Image 1 (tube, rainbow, N blue to C red):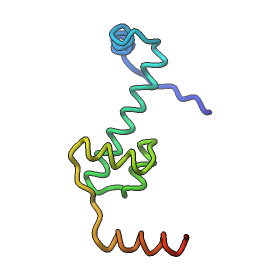
Image 2 (tube, rainbow, N blue to C red; image 1 turned 180 degrees about the horizontal axis):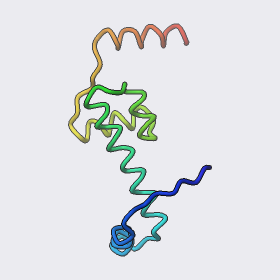
Image 3 (cartoon, rainbow, N blue to C red; image 1 turned 135 degrees about the vertical axis):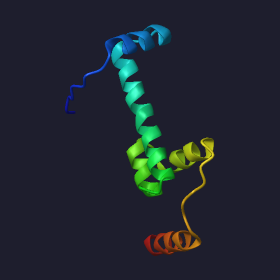
Image 4 (tube, helix red, strand yellow; image 1 turned 90 degrees about the horizontal axis):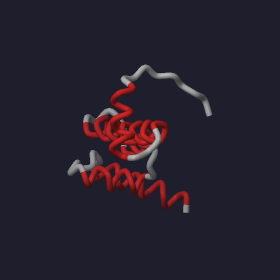
Length: 94
């Protein structure tokens, strides 16, 4: 795994760590993971990424990403043709 350095206000991280009673590294990992989900949902909602790519960006499996969208009350950006094509492909694979 590659290490990345980021400039952040340490007071914000300290505050989160204190409130959550967790180590700063755990807090940062959680913030990054939640941020990935938020960004993926935003990109999907704006129509900039597909359902599958949104799930991958969020670090979730497809069904989890669909559940996340449902929690955010975001409708799926898929058409009947998309569903039919997916079913056709699935039938060919199986």
